[in-house]
Amino acid sequence: MPRKLFVNLPVKDLDRSVAFFTALGFSFNPQFTDANATCMIVSDDSFVMLLVEPFFQGFTAKPLGDARQQTEVLLAFSLESREEVDELVGKAVAAGATITQPARDHGFMYQQSFADLDGHQWEPFFMDPDAVPPST
Image (tube, rainbow, N blue to C red; front, side, top):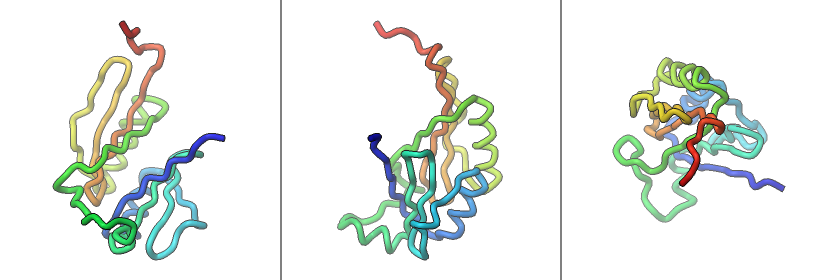
């Protein structure tokens, strides 16, 4: 049975974050959604739990960082084509995201980077496995 990944991210305004990620084409599991949290579906086995900051704080003794000031994590996920990467990033910017790095083309991999409304850095990418250089 494959493992499922649940990434938990603190957000300031849950409704605003849901609207942002809905504009990017993500959907949410209503079974795991209430006033404090929602479960954003990335794939059949990957999910992002968006938790309002006070609720998130209840899961850790450490202080919350400010993702607008420090990098806490890079959230990379694959897409089916370079065009899909560009399209998603265009939607993100239209919904209020900021570009954090210029597009990078490594030949076998193409990626872009943006920060969501709370400053979390997302890195959608397309990788062509047939173009990966052989290891030496």
